[in-house]
Length: 356
Image (cartoon, rainbow, N blue to C red; front, side, top):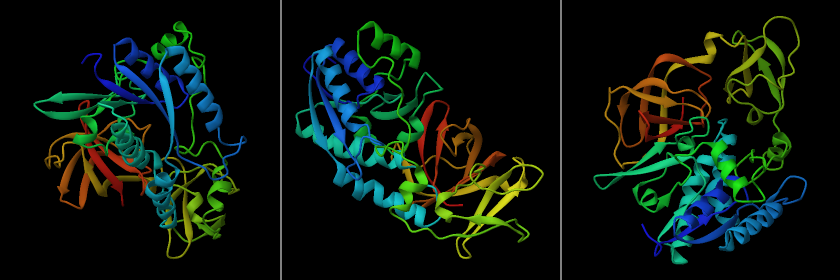
């Protein structure tokens, strides 16, 4: 790769995307920064930092010596990501909007726009790696296991990966901040963003209530004993401990299930209650990085949530629409709506949305 290649970097105003642009500039690429605005509803200073993020991104671009443009994908985000987000909550599941946002916005709408601007390739500040082997592109975990983001990228396909660079894939977060500080980037110590992808750090129940009506109901034990009242099943997720407002003595209470038909939140006492563990799951809305499903009955590893350690598993059945996975050990708080992502060593094979 040489200086003739034009790369457009998704710049968010944070340290990761800033160092991504810096490194590519140093490597001789023709770099253009692109700042994406993807949310406009109640875009206030209280909850949304997009204006400050843009100021930061422009300051970094000026420091690096590259041009930066802005693009508004709010309509695409609402149609392709947020509508699915609300539908999942209505159905009693707990979605992960970052997964869909990556597939539909950062590596589809953004990629398409970048190609129209004359890009040969795009780059983002994700902690992951791409490797080409025999004409196929593999998605690999980052070297920094504490920051690896391949879990959120499992829906990327061959066409998307072939046009993508992840310059931070071999770096550790501390190294990225050191590079930013050494190069005098004004955001070297900026706090990492959290919260829902592109929506910010709003109080979640308050935010969700603007779009979905409250529907209070009973909190019950598996035996049917009423121990409290919930605010609406959409506000809770499997394994949740905080915010249940259940008194009494004994071990802490955890959400074990949602009974949508009866509008009942089922809770159990104790982190290790058997109702919180499942050894098998079914997932749908499958996406395989190679375009082909993995073999059945091989030993793989999988994550059913981002911060989870890899868990040994095998695929017992797979077809075009669904995949059945069995774990070597029961898994805690497997949550419908979340993604299960399958790995073979460091290679991310793909995954799907947990149904049950």
